[in-house]
Amino acid sequence: MTVLVTGGRGAIARAVTAGLIAAGQDVRVASREPSALPSAVAYDPLDPAPALRDISQVFLYSAPSTAPAFVAAAEAAGVKQVVLLSSLSALGGPEDPHAKTEHVVANASYATTRLQPGAFMSNAKYWAHQVRAIGQIRLPYLEAEEAPIHEQDIADAAVRVLLDGPGNGHDGRGYPLTGPESMTRRHQIGLITEVTGVPIEAVDLTPDQARAEMGMRDEGQRETLLAYWASRVGTPAAIEPGVELLTGHTARTFTTWLTDNPGLFT
Ligand SMILES: NC(=O)c1ccc[n+]([C@@H]2O[C@H](COP(=O)([O-])OP(=O)(O)OC[C@H]3O[C@@H](n4cnc5c(N)ncnc54)[C@H](OP(=O)(O)O)[C@@H]3O)[C@@H](O)[C@H]2O)c1
Image 1 (cartoon, rainbow, N blue to C red):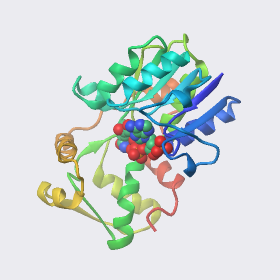
Image 2: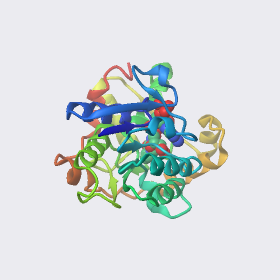
Image 3: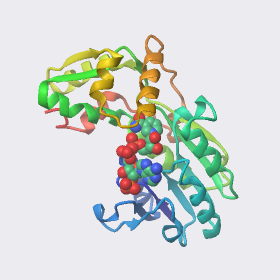
Image 4: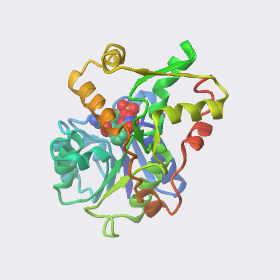
């Protein structure tokens, strides 16, 4: 029984791989850039058949455009279980890209479990260069609330489902996953200063300033993000019980994430 872990360079895939190996599983790591990792195989999302040879379970990163190719190849390879890294946004309706991927990936003969995490704590990594360069974090909607989740908790949940295997209560299920508390982005910035000792000026950008500074090529994606953050102002994020349910431990805090990632902001 070999487990294929796709998205090998991602933080979650790395933690899933470590967890499965620690549990004594055979793991094949796959990446679109295999040369970046020791002993990874190539993963072409449009032609996943070579990576899927002799595989029984898969931890999957996917997208609407490549999901059909995965399903066809996984069926042909005789895969028994797929744990899909999806998103909480999939619960927003069928037009959401993650909802579309879920729909395609789950429509198959293998057992599917959808992990639906909210915002990752690791998104804070994208703020680090501003802190080091100018001592500021410049964001729109600093009062937007989210319940960010530690990548290790997503990985722990995935490992639990894969170790339990198909036919053990996870088939066809979706697990919304969040961190342990709702907090504003301003509060997250305050915690970074508290833990690292680095003074940071939080600058609340207007939406137009944010459009100019975000540097996102995909306008649609940028506007979706801005609208999402606007909708989160003054609305505490719901805390989902998924991490505790699957792993038996409480979800890790943002303070823990900061201590697990030393040196990022200095
Ligand atoms: N960031 C968040 O707050 C958040 C929240 C909820 C859900 N998600 C979802 O979680 C996934 C990873 O997010 P991330 O922020 O960690 O992204 P990332 O840093 O861009 O991706 C991490 C790794 O995931 C693999 N990957 C990403 N998209 C893939 C795809 N379409 N097909 C195959 N492999 C793919 C790649 O591994 P290789 O290059 O090694 O193949 C990539 O290096 C995405 O689907 C994202 O939408 C993100």
